Length: 122
Image (tube, rainbow, N blue to C red; front, side):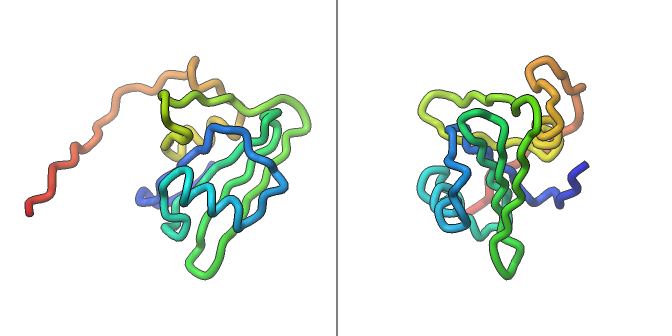
């Protein structure tokens, strides 16, 4: 199971990515396509077109790290995004389910408390 601070966000790029891409190209995708700061410490997840390889890019205060997984059998779940979007944000449990091969559309989460964010006063 992944253990990450609650402040860490996880962004999944839903378009197929060339797994030959390294630190520079993946951070460029995070910044220019996903419109997120690659130096934020958040996780940026990329899958190849066959769905059997996954790379996760993150900044760990002193440099970029890439976590890379190749499945020997099967594929990761293909995620869909709303029209006009190329990435989605998920929580750590959903990422763990994706990496373990659990179908997100058949799994159901029970209702839990979620704090509402109030607009900041100016």
